[in-house]
View 1 (cartoon, rainbow, N blue to C red):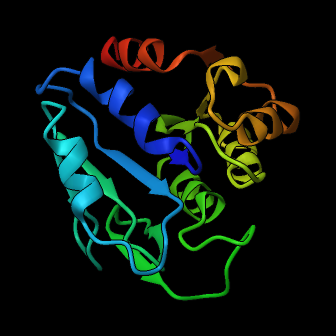
View 2: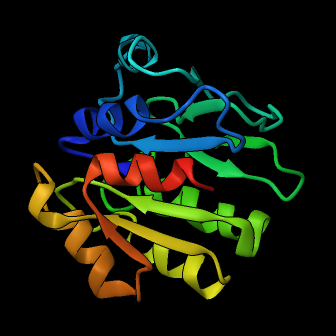
Length: 178
């Protein structure tokens, strides 16, 4: 999942409807201030049944967790399905970058990947979601009419043929059926 401006509220709405026995890992790149601390994860963790945590270098990805990219690091997925952190240049003015996460995840998971682009003020996530579709994964975008900032969802919709355009709670319900 990728989010920027308005993302915390949207993520909270999505995760509140998901059961604690959700069988897939969720990995989130939320644009952050470089000095932001983990209080935002705590905020979400108190509102959902899944465990929220910051992703760590070389950590194996496990079901039942919501992993967040650390502030000021790109989060990548390795082919062995572990995390890698990078301080490479910003992409779309962002680190963590949604495109960096999605593109690396598409290579690791292929058709088994679901990409979700949420509220945000730039086009980060659009190219990554296209890469997910190129690898036969599923593309979901927040309905721009429900986004605090609709630019990221609109850019994703323009970049590729998305599979679902949904309101936040509907995204949570849809994912819960998988």
